[in-house]
Amino acid sequence: MYFFKKCISILYLKIVGKLSRGKGYGQKHKFLKSTITKTESILKTDYAETWGGKIYVHSNDTGSLSTLSISGTFGPRDTQTVKDNVRPGDFVIDLGANIGYYTCLLAKLVGKDGKVFAFEPDPRNIKIFNKYVQDKRVQLFALALSSKKGMANFYQSYQPSTD
Image (cartoon, rainbow, N blue to C red; front, side):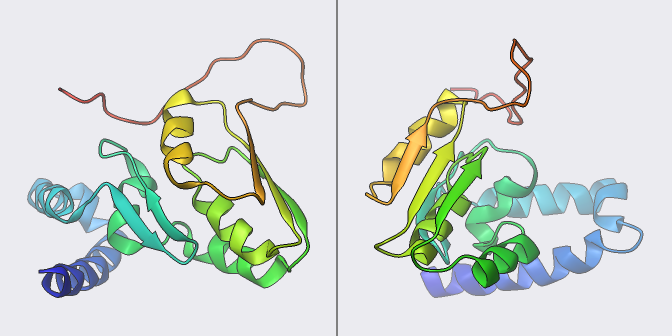
């Protein structure tokens, strides 16, 4: 079953990639958008196998994170940039760590002598983050950071679950 699902996922990603480029037919046509949404709901799981390791995801996320469990990569170019620039022994900061995709990647890259300082204010993300990030190299701070002192609105991108 895993092999079959992996093959379907690869095929899906190639097709959706072509539909979403150019004129964006995958978003403009109701039938295609509906088909993509239904396919994603079948293929998505509550975890993703990534270069940084296995991480949990929210089942009701929207946007790019919603397909992380299918593709295993969030922001391929950004991921490659991080991999090209972070070295063993580095101390790095992950601002807006979200569910920890980059934090896990960074923890692997900095090695045993490095450290990752992750900042994430969303309790929902912190709960997921703490499920799998049990690494001595990672220190999580439940804070939002800004260049200004004061209050700010906090927006979340997800669809409330119906359970």
